[in-house]
Image 1 (tube, helix red, strand yellow):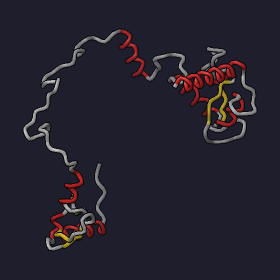
Image 2 (cartoon, one colour; image 1 turned 90 degrees about the horizontal axis):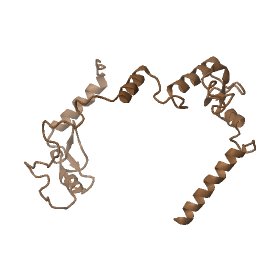
Image 3 (cartoon, helix red, strand yellow; image 1 turned 90 degrees about the vertical axis):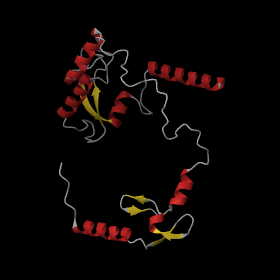
Image 4 (spheres, helix red, strand yellow; image 1 turned 45 degrees about the vertical axis):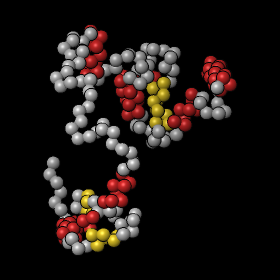
Length: 208
């Protein structure tokens, strides 16, 4: 990949900065100690000098603790892995289950079939949205779209990936059809689960 050619203005700025750096007589005031010093007394970052002198910068970086000898010059760390160390599983053959999972992953298929977050489910949702022109069939909204199962996922396994069983809805229309929003009917099973979850949370808080 070739770099873009430098503009004339950028070249001019670089040359001006270099001239300033070469001028050792330039005086600069430190922002921390407020003492005027020569520009060479300031730490340099690439082509620019910072606005904090070397002494102030070093003091801010040092914590005041003595060197215990852990990182002294020539120190060799105690490492459990010496040069030439090989892991315990190197060269061992993979199990049949591992081989099967690896081949499925390479082909782009799901390892656990029947998962709602699997490859098949994502492909089904994409095809449903493409068929409906990427808009909600109820209100015509173009963003926050969901692929809704007309016959619910858990009711019929054979219709899970059937395109005729899918319809594109936006998040609000989907919530209304499923009954997630307030003022809509919620099944007894869902109400029981909600009440059980609330009881568990109350018990956990009372114990703590």
